[in-house]
Length: 150
Image 1 (cartoon, rainbow, N blue to C red):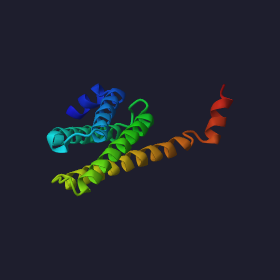
Image 2: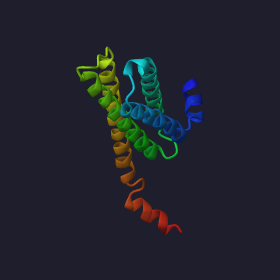
Image 3: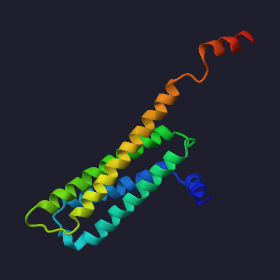
Image 4: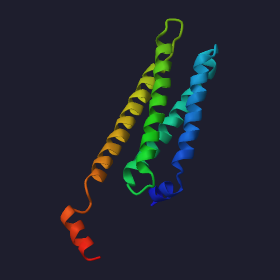
């Protein structure tokens, strides 16, 4: 029952907008000359939050095939996942640098793998839906029969 409440009150566009803004903040952090240790916990919390919300969005889109603009939202989700994955890749590369030591390298890699997996699921779900919609719902014979009646 709770799943339906989440789906009905979830605004995908606004939620993805906020996640993209959070991802941009992480990207900006990487471009500044700041001590990573100072912001480490907050950055990790943000990444965990983004991961959790992206997981909820994907599950909602997969479970509810009647969501308006579902394919568009799957595409938007896939794009957000790509942006998130790029930031995570950058964090991994910084963690690999000799002057940085990050005990969270495994965490970054795990989050990146989860993001990549979700992106693939979103893309596969969209493709399968496109395949379904490309097949005629009514056969040519049925359509001719229907048109004869009018």
